[in-house]
Length: 210
Image (cartoon, rainbow, N blue to C red; front, side):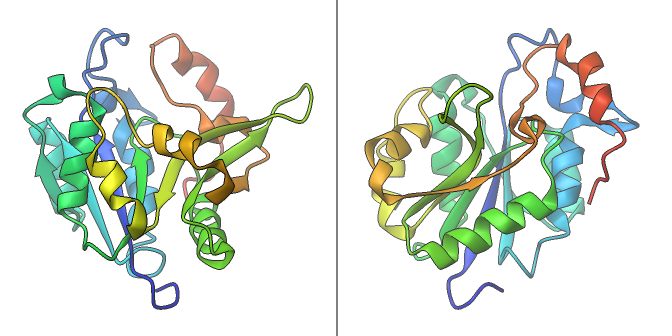
């Protein structure tokens, strides 16, 4: 475990996939459901990078799969309340003094080593917030992305979120307290919203699924 600060990973897998024309999280990709690509990689970090791994979903197949991997799970029966509800359910499974790392299960090209680097860098930084980032091709602007990490002092602000608003609102509010772990491959930050993204994704299909 990283130092004396327990870190809980909260995987969010409760979206309605409105733009995908079907459940994208269960869509087959390279021989397994899309959500399992990230879930399998994160499972390898349990007990080292993460004290425990929790998953929030409205889908029984995903909940059952997560249980089988040794994750704690929580059913979200109110996806209509937006991502804030999933955040609140995730927090209910974490200790009040835990650092919480939120990841979304529709990022199938995110690597385990990247998430490990984010957490380790965050813990060394002394900051209260953290996320991945990638320098955009033109200029010096940094594109921010998931996963995102929150120190216990931000728990109250996370619980105050409403509607389809996630932790990005808090990150934007406190830029001075943000640690950014930069990745060189923007594909790691990409999430799948439409089926049209999947053929292009095959260019990354040979990447190791560590």
